[in-house]
Figure (cartoon, helix red, strand yellow):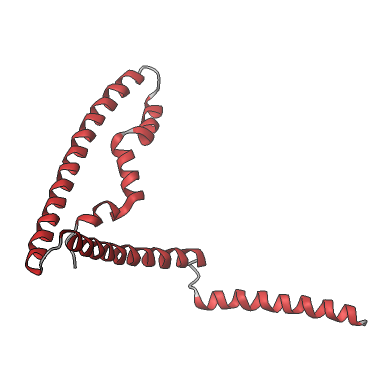
Length: 159
């Protein structure tokens, strides 16, 4: 066997041994019903949630510090003012939520009229499939699932 052949053979063996050990290590660490991608996804989501909450707290603190500086607030003014600001934000959030609910009802009414119009064009099965794509409740559910709890995170009480 020539030196060149030995080098190629050694390289191939190292590659195969590395592949096999990686495969076996993955099976030993991860349960058979869980993939690496699932584990990374779950870990990543937990980390993003932790960062979001931490970022929110940091953001609130920085905003309060900046406002305190800009308004030259005394210590006795800070807490009552920030409490009033939190109340204001909650009230505005409630108004926005109420407006969204009103809009949603109007959209459902419009969709009902639209569905009546297209019922002469589509059969029952097609209408059902159309609803799965365009019905306001279906679309809203899909959006909420995609957005998650982010919508309300700015308006909750500080820890």
